[in-house]
Amino acid sequence: MNVFLAVVGVLGVSASGPIMAATAAPALAIAFWRNALGAVLMGTPAVLGRRREFGQLTARDFKWTAIAALALALHFACFITSLQLTSVAAATALVCLQAGWIALFNVLRGISVPPAVLAGLAAAFAGVLVISGFDLGLSEEALIGDVLAVAGGALAGVYTIAGGKARESMSTGTYTTLCYGACAVLLLALCAAFRQPLVGFPPAAWLGILGVTIVAQILGHTVFNHLLAVISPLVVSMIILLEIPGAAILAAVFLDEKLPAGTYAGLTLILAGLTVVVAGQRRIRAGQRTQAVPPAPPALGGDKL
Image (cartoon, rainbow, N blue to C red; front, side, top):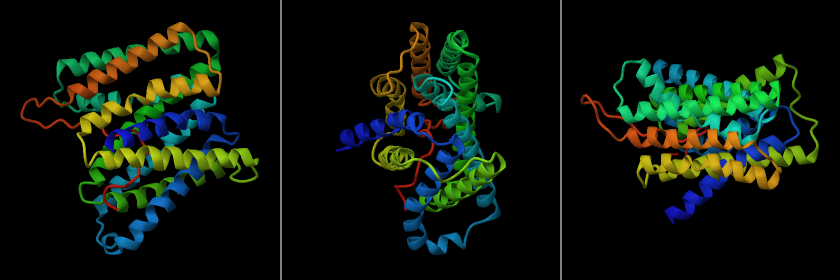
């Protein structure tokens, strides 16, 4: 059963990139509806079942949730825009650098990491340079898309770290209700600031928005959240890395996306580097516990609603 759920989860997150790239709606609008619908679907059970917990939240809880919501809103703005500028395969691989960014943030904070993790980081970020170099030869637009995807991965790392702080004292359901609700409000403000419409899309666009909400939000990340409770977080993190080749294959099949051979070399470097980073986080150094990297955002609540 767990193997079946893992396959469903990988297909869900892998399909999110191609679906959003094919959806004829503004990037911020897609991000808004994805979060708003996800917050309603996952937040309703939390509000009904954990009403008392909302009244016991502290200033610290609100602080970390607000940071996470801001990072998530900016992450979606960057990532979905990148899908409209560069290839799905490149954008997905670059945003999956979330795992590398978290490890790099730990290095910058003075936290010891195994040498293998540093080597994996070097390989993963070398893959970024390879992909960006080939995309520069394609168009300036593709390079901008790469930069936005890298920024989206860094913001995803901030979101994950802040969310981890918030969830030290909050259940998953309470956290996702507040975080995704706040994220939707922030995205609504961004849509107003940049004058991006929220309605008036063709039926196919609404189907795309609904599809990415169900496939990626519910079937993808909620499944991974469940698996975290029943199998090793390391195994879950390794499974999630299959999103990189999965998105590339789906984009090639359904969007007829063709990439230079060098871009595939960059994808391979990123995948190999992140595999080393995730595996290396099993190690305990200097008496400090090192956690496996959580799933890529948005990890909707499902384990403790």
